[in-house]
Amino acid sequence: MTQVDIGFRIEEIHKKIARAAERAGRDPAQVTVLGACKQVERERVLQAIALGIGHVGENWIQEAEAKFKGPDRPDRLVSLHLIGHLQTNKVRSAVALFDVVQSVDSVRLASRMETIANELDRHVQIYIQLNVGSEPTKEGVRPDQVLELAEFVATCEHLELVGLMAVPPHLEDLEAVRPYFRVLRELRDGVCRLEHYRDATLGLSMGMTEDFEIAVEEGATMVRLGSAIWGARPT
Image (cartoon, rainbow, N blue to C red; front, side):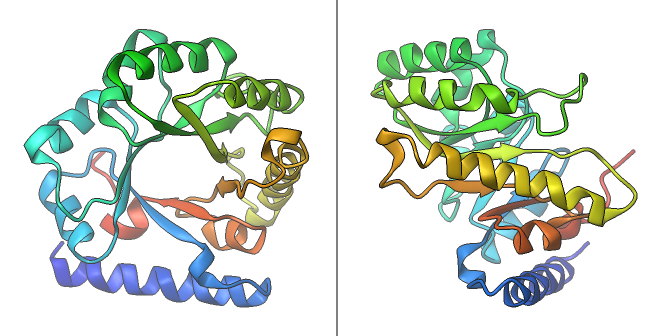
């Protein structure tokens, strides 16, 4: 796929976001496209960054290090996000590399991140990951645990809660996914009623290639798109 092809895909994505935002009475400028670049070679990622995809996300720390660590980090990369599960024994590497960690799902993990961020003198933005579908195979806190975790993060000097993230169940009927996005939005609104977050503007990282238009209609501020930008991943 050429840079021209990638550019066309990005243009189409922005058109779809604009239409979805219009349907919901929203400003499309409120929605950020995150390039989810798992298994996408560095050159194609650089092409997308050059075309304005300034925020990218990786699922695996080792792959992110190979593409972005140290002098290999592109100048036009605004922020690098970890969007995959983070094990506590990988926290040091994650805190050293990523600007944003979207997969914080326990007080234990947040506590470990705070300790390491203090040691490394790093400030890390985080999203709380929710398991909105209560799926046993997926990571994320239960909805009834989100306030406790948000309150703990408020006590951390080196972590900043910037939003909530979720991967809803995979359903053939995309309209059936809509209620899960609404749940995440309602949970975000609940966090914003906590004393520490009353003046905060917390985002919603939700929606991927198949369902991002519905996510935008339901309030997404960040959509995580992979194949929509770069085409199908290798199998």
